Amino acid sequence: MIILSIESSCDETSVSVTREREILSNIVSTQIAEHRIYGGVVPEIASRRHTEAISAVCDEAVRAAGVTYDELDAIAVTFAPGLIGALLVGVNFAKGLAMSLNIPLIPVHHLRSHIAANYITNKELKPPFLCLTVSGGNTIITEVRDYTKFEPIGATFDDAAGECFDKTARCLGLQYPGGVTLDKIATVSDFKKYPLPYPKSPAGEYDFSFSGLKTAVINLVHNATQKGEEIDIPVLAATVRERVCDMLITNTLKAAKDKGHKTLCLAGGVSANSELRRRMEEECEKEGITLYYPELKYCGDNAAMVGVQGYYEFLSGNTAGADLNAAATLPINYR
Ligand code: KG4
Image 1: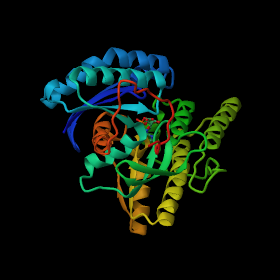
Image 2 (image 1 turned 180 degrees about the vertical axis):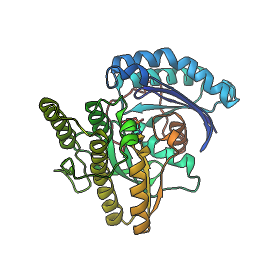
Image 3 (image 1 turned 60 degrees about the horizontal axis):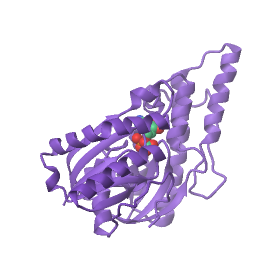
Image 4 (image 1 turned 90 degrees about the vertical axis):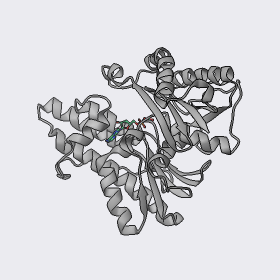
C-alpha cells in the first residue's frame, strides 16, 4: 500500500511517500531560518509559509519516490495537535488531494507519528512497549499497547522539555532552536557551579515540570547581568541539560519498572539529545531493558513518520471524510 503523507503541525512543511514501513521519499522544507530572528515560531508566519511551500514539496516527494499520483493508495495527514493555522494548511491540502484522486484520507495524531518514527529504523520493533516522547511542545510517557492503542501515564504539568531547552538557550544568547546548540556546547561536567533546582512535578508520579528550572536560569542570568558578572555558558548549559535528563530518565525508568516494560523507545525532537541517549542507554543496560530511538533525521518533525503511523491507522479502520477538522490539542488516546 503506497501512502502519501503530509506534516505541517509546526515549522516544517514535509511530504513523504511510504510503503508500509519503507520510506520511498521524505522531503522536509524547514522554516527555522525565518523564525530564528523572533527567537521562536511565529504561528501566522508558519501558516503562510506552509501555504506557499506545500504544493511544490508534494510534487517533489512524488517525483523523488519514483511514483505517479495515480499509484497512490491513500493520503495521510497530521490533523492534531499543533499550531491550528499550520495544521489547517496540511489538512485542507490533504482533503483536496484525497478527493481529487478518490482515495482514502487518514487522520494521524502528531504524537503517535513521533512514536512511529521508531518503526522506520528498528524493523524488528513492535508493540507493546513504553515510549518517552519529548519535543518542543510535548513531554509524555505512553504505554504503546498496540499500533493504534495508547495509554498516557505521565506528562508535563507545565512546559515541555524542548521549551525549557529553547528558552534557557535563548536567555544564554543561543540561536533558535536552542536545544540543538545547547546540546553541542554542553561539553563540561561541572554541575556544582550553578545551583539550579532539580525539577519535580507536583502532579502524578510519572509527571514532569520544567517551568521552575527555566525561570531559575532566567533569574540567574538577569542577576549576573545586573552585577556585571560573566556567565560560564558551557557550564550553565551542561547543568540545565543534566537536570532535564535527570527528570526524564528517572520518571521513565520508574514507569518501565512499575509497569513491567522491557522495551523502551524515545521519540520527538529532544530524543536527538546526545546526553539523554547516552545516559538512557547506560541505565537501560543496567536494568535489562532494550532501548530504541529513531535515526536523527526522523527525530524532528517529518512526514515519513506520519505515513508509517498512517498505515497502521488505516489497518485499524481510521479514515476520515471531507469534514475532517484540525485540532490544536487532542489526547493521544482520543480513539
Ligand atoms: O519534534 P520537534 O521537531 O517539534 C515539535 O513537535 O515540537 O522538536 C523540536 C524540539 C526543539 O525544542 C529543539 O530545541 C529540540 O527539539 N531539539 C533538541 C535537540 N535537537 C532538537 N533538544 C535537545 N537536544 C538536541 N540535540
